[in-house]
Length: 483
Picture: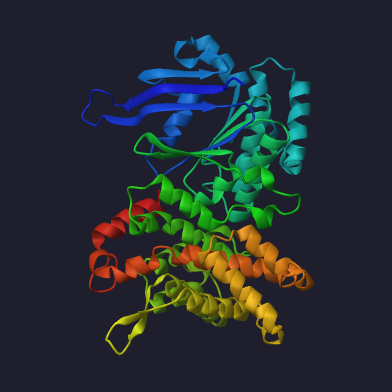
């Protein structure tokens, strides 16, 4: 099969010849095939959006060639570029880029105007897309009257109204709440799987990597690693929530991609991801502003830059005053639960007991000790009213599964299936809801703990004497957080 997109020795420089010259792409080589779902992943400033712009024809490389559908973009004239943009590609932007002076219907239909499609035909096609994406009732409104999730669905409808082969999505869920983000990602997934569109997604969120067939990891303008997501096509119907790639596996991909960084440095990079996972774990029915505040204070708590009192006060403060809006009792309950998770995560990742033995050394915590403590934590958290009634054999099987998940390479899927498997067939036989809760709680603890023990144990290097991040480290962390 011939590649749909091929880049060879691409180099791109911003402000060439000036004092602020910056090379955004360095010797990029890649091939993308029809119907693939490709992800460009990396931190802010790594060149992923620039590479997307080169593929779209919005930027022209200084060196190298970029071929799309057997045509070299570097040799196209203005007329050929216009045709390429109208017919071959659809673009989805983080900022939506809708025209507020036009109705929702006219925004979606706009690309068809340039193909000289009759008004009747383009409105029919646009209505079909609006109905498909659940926003047909908003057709006569203007974009600014709608939510961010609705506006992004309009943007997606506009991008595919001309039925292009390639969809380019530049951080399409960066401004969305978790529910809207999930909806947009599912739409892109359907466009790829059902309509056979080639999708190229730019993201800095590891949570999205499970959607891609291949992931190109980028750093400092270069592709530093390419991985194939072999699990993506193994999903069985109805199990996408269970079998999707575990967060721990995504972190392992990051470690392999950024081999030059220490665990501590990777921990700082993924801290926003940890905060987002934590926030989604605790709140699902708050508005977007409350969720953002909660995510921010979780982020600060994980970095140890907010006191217990400040954290509790922000949870309790009304959202109109910059808080989350929980009542005092709920805020205290959530704080206790968060602290338990943090303590459990730290225990799993530390190497020795705090108490010294007779030789004045810190005795190593065994795998069995960690597995046993985590097992009781999971059951007490997710199965509190019933776990004392569990058969002794069932308890041993759960402990065995936890130990194998922690130390023997048991996957998230196999862990789930073992707990869900009937007891008579050698499993544990818990109900599916409990199994799901235990599995997700375990994943959260594993992700949370990654890098935590190293950061705390190396606090003389990483933390100031006051137990806070040093100014330099905090600046780096905040830069990553607010990219």
